[in-house]
Length: 619
Image: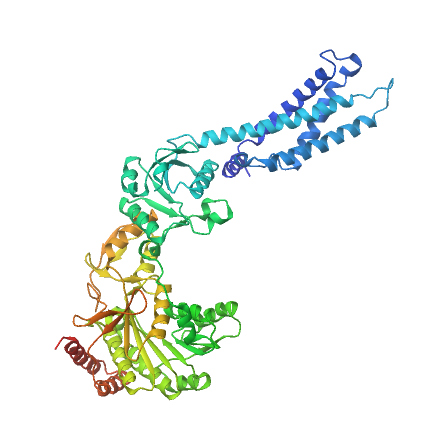
């Protein structure tokens, strides 16, 4: 390793003071020895002792510097010098003093005199400790002053002037190698405006962020409000995104330990931008339908299915049956659930299109509640393989419901989608037909069936957000289908809570939707993700994909929404179709899909699309 490499490693460790510290310690020992002699003899050193001054200086220098090295006092990072450093210094000095006393007593006594008076060694040790401590504390002060100089490094704004923000400022100042300079704080406490915290001014409230960023040439925003309501944090993050500045956020649990590390800060994810305060649910009401019962989840290892399983297993079912065709993800989910509640979950590799295998599973476990999350959901892919969408989304749903009826299940919940409303693609049509299969079963009266209809689920596999995140990791561009395209969004945990609440409050044939708020423009979402990530990625418009709509709706034009007993959960009032209306079409679709007759299947789908749309129009 070259000298240059060594210097680079030392600089990377944040400590360029090793050689200067050594030289200063040698000077301290020399000065301490001379001062100790002069102090002991009131400025006039007897000749008998003066001849031992230089040997003592040489020996003390070797002893003390070797001990300092052994105690790590030349490997410390000066910005972290504190009480632990003083303890190490006192220990090294005490051992050094003892060693020098031992050497002194090893010499023969001449005229009842030792070579070095014990008082000199005591004063020398005290002065070495004070001098070396002073050197290191002075170095820390200089490091602090250098790092706190305004106008140097990446210009940072901290939102939140409480204890978390103060700790964050201290951490940044102790790390000059990061090249960050805190320009100011923002905080909504009016009493703090224009006050200073460790020399840094509180510039104004958090609502002034979009104005402060260009005014102070801010390059990064750090949100240090771990205990703030989610709505407040979301507003701040959206303001930062609109200002086009990179942003990081402090997680909720960081401040609990009383210290902050910059590694604790995380990048902003889309749930921070779009997530809402959790919808309240009645856990006692849900628990009454789950606790002590056998519950089955189809599509158990998918985004929604796996979250359902996590929430269900916490409610105390006697058995949780995981029905899934993807064996790898099923195994991973099973191992995860085993750590939560050993012996409750059972893995069943089962394709819902396989009636015999599905029957075997249902006959063995006889679940009381079945949550049906298994489905093909990717719109363009289903346009390429409509027969597979029919087999899984329609016939698969029919198979599960009929198995529930044969083996005396009590409740069935269908996971539906906003794309089932006025369907413009194969996937939407199949989910619309699945809803009608559910409604037909509710009329037969053997099974309590309900459906839950919602929009896009954040971070689910194949959704737009993971695609954007992957594109950002590769430097862009972010691909958006159309400048005007909008979608409704909800989080995976919120979707799972809604499903569980729906099965608890539902009456036969109910369809529920969540109060989703306003739809989100996808291009705005893309711009905010680019801004907050700090990645200079472009946005590219690629055009609508096959079967894709500009805007989705959670209800048909003629449907009405009525409130339920739970906040933010609404019940859809719709015009029912006769129980047998689609049975011949189901059989035809099943047969055509099984034989792979693409043209005949396409013709049948077109006829069904016309019938569904006609039925969906108000009469």
